[in-house]
Image (cartoon, rainbow, N blue to C red; front, side):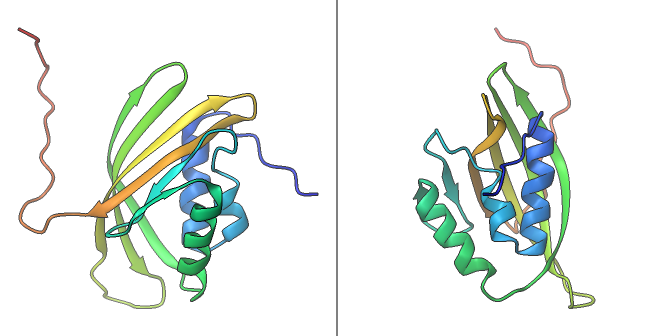
Length: 145
């Protein structure tokens, strides 16, 4: 029996998620997902996958080619509460063996929940970055009126 890892932070889960994605490792990928919640995964241009069986099947299909990815994460935005953490970022994905390839740029939102087994992913939503403009940055303080 394989023991599921204990993730003490959302950051640990995210590192494990992107490591599993880069290595096309299905078991490592599934270890990051919440088992007692109803997780959701949306791949770029794909349907909403609800529940672990659907999520596992989609990752199995994606990993079937054995392609390894180079992943660069940028522009992280974090919203935290005691039980949930939302991490929004930009994924720059390229195939490991293809030199000079322009990366696919993807907007991703990952939501993590804290529970008895530590932190786990409950949502991964990725969509293609619009080609028309770079991401807007808003570092100004916000005031509610």
